[in-house]
Figure (tube, rainbow, N blue to C red):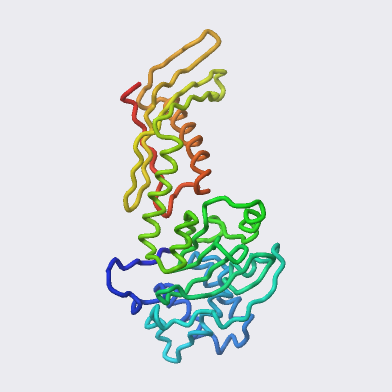
Length: 316
């Protein structure tokens, strides 16, 4: 589930603070709250609702407190704007050993661990955000406008361990998204930088980093051809990377592809629908994803954009 970013220059503080699906969740809880009665029963109900709509059940406690802090007798949760929403800053921070902090992070509750802290705050524009900081300095996680942002740069072994202990991973967020940002853009976002501008800057930084390491370099590799006792050999080069609103495109110029056997070269011809060509592209894709993981620890998306690998055989 993705939030809508309003692309206007004027102040957007009067825009809705909640997604339509979040409004529906709070309204349903409002309707059932008297019947449910207790906090535990309301949280159990929220878990069922969240699972139904594809959100992580770990967010049930967060929505319980969000409901409590923003209770409206008229059930008009759709009228809550970014400027008047009550964040969870009033909740008291609790101490937690680091190995248990993911219980707080996933629920977006204030806590203090060993050299790590989670807190609710407002940026310089007055927008609410949940921030997890390491050593009281740089943010390693930010939850803002319905999206988790995680720092992509590597730090000390201790901070890397802390990041793993937060439990915030793409596969565990349901339909919620997780986006990786360079450290500089994480600070910019925390200070109130526009989310779209922050992501655009992060894309440019990531593009520059990838091209610095990969563009124009020749890569050679071997791979097995299953059940044939043959070996495939290939070579490729990375061209000019581009990105648009939906896709992050990486052009791969295939330099060669050869099938080897005991007697040497068997074939260097690509059939349009040949299994060798399919296997070659699969191997290149896998190797590229491993290389890309160095920069952003993503699987198939970069900041919400699909990774598109275009294969060019014109120079074979």
